[in-house]
Image (tube, rainbow, N blue to C red; front, side, top):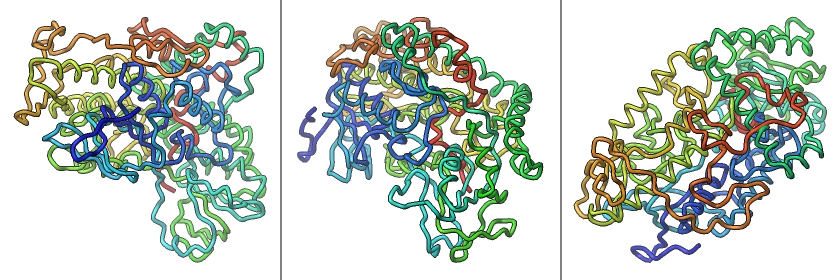
Length: 602
């Protein structure tokens, strides 16, 4: 890939993708399948992988089954376990980068420092640690789990021992024989505690709020299963489809009927009782809120680790640090040599928002100061030709985020098709598309209205799903199939066309005059353009879909409701019941990597 020279000699590209995790690499693959090769992927680290590169702590693994936590267009028949670990997932992402010829587009060690919209040129000016460039379109795929959150604890700066966050694990520091404090009880902590407890001299877990924990029925995937998945792709598709379908059926309990979750709470309590025999400890570990309000965690090792004689639970948040002594809110004092923070990420206040300056000179962070909101989770008013992957209200509480990412890639692809059609129309040359404030507000009102009945809003907890105003700007209140339908294509009635000649916005309804559109102004929706397949990169992974933009997202989840044409890599393990644990994970079994989970605060 080589960009063209723009104004001032700066490199210019059609699309700049920010980040190289699942969202960024998925966007890169889709761009190539759409025939777009004039793009770059800007990555601040020295390798691809996103949160699966950053989270390398002991025990890091995914709490979504592997065959559902992968791209539909890049199925992997050789996952080693039903819930694979961080090394396998990171290797998968590296393999995707190689297989689809993405390396030539990726710029490592290139941190985006600022992005500014140039209204005169209708392009984004991008300042990076490696220089400047411009782009017609920016796709931000930094993800909500990329910037660790460290709580402000009095005395932390004077602590004489070792301090690090779970997402910035210091592998050079030897924990053996040390007195260690683990702060937080989120998805990362419940994997770290069992992994390090046998090594350290003493482990103290500071718990602010106990999580609901269900068993994680992980096992090795047999050589016979892997052989069948390679030789008979429909078995892999069936396995994925079963995993997806079960989770779709669980959604209504979270979004419409939280009272139905009582049975799941009973199962979680039974899981605790099997390992925690001390009634006093069980009381400390039993949540007082409805299951599902905070992320449901999966572990079969967490409770046994807490029952060890060399592991202590402090059921009170960390208040201050006096030298090497940690003082809890209840006055408990603990002297330690090292502190590990498992306190989550900046989810509702993503730092990337401070680095995006829109058409009116305001940053995205300022625009979102009263709460994040984006049209269909992708575009924000005042920021033309800018979209985000895993944007506001696209998170999940019970299924795979890869399904949501692929839906957003559908939307991204159609957005670029519409831009191409408009650029070649009678509107007068190059244009940009900006989300109408009314459309963004309408979408957000609809989402928040649906959110009122959900367990995340009514379950009686404070979670990292909620922003500073108490609004849930994180989770999608529906099924992945519903979201797929909502993002199937761009509705131009929801957008304004920005022209360079007069630097003014015109209603996107004029797009009805675009050649080959053929729709009435009242519909204001451009028919799906077929585009060109372009070059697709290297040969696809075994069983991957062909490099055809019309099929590039087939089978996102298998049998998408309302869209049978998207049936694809989806389904059931040969032998069926042998994988009941993997397929029948409890409702709310966490949408993201355990390594990427959030407790929010200590």
